[in-house]
Image 1: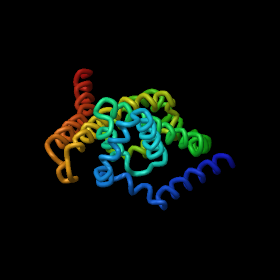
Image 2: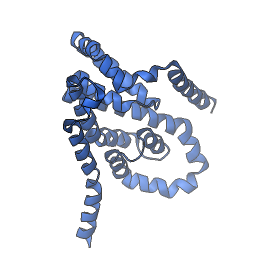
Image 3: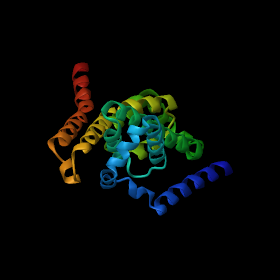
Image 4: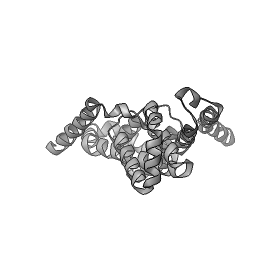
Length: 225
């Protein structure tokens, strides 16, 4: 128990230090645009190192629930292009979410399961049977905050491997939009120029994609009738 408390306090202190130090102010689109030339030059000089640093920053931002994941996804598209950027963003987001999940499960989740195991028994059974469908739908339809899904999933009995693959697959549509939009940042001079049909069209398509699970469920119900 003492170790869990120490881990929880340590993570909380890291988040506080990050916010107080002002490091989170760098995770905004205006700053990225201002430093665009320097960042692109760094990638050109050492692609592997910058990609590694980018993924570490992404993992840290997600793991510590620091706002700015969307900006990092845009940056991934700007710096590395669509396919490499998508790969790096997916790795960073998935690993960061996994750390969130592990923290929730082994620091606070185990205690909650022990205290309220009888009340959560039926819920855990449903998660065991349909967990992958629930998680995949939540990832495909970004209604709830990303970090909240990570934590809540950690409090359930869903398997770690199920959480990892549903996260990695489910975030692809949203990541494609942000990374693609980020590739257009090379051609804009101001944030206002960024909001063009080239960036809004993928957003519309992403919104339409969110309705696919709903349509699928309705079609399946009709087929079973």
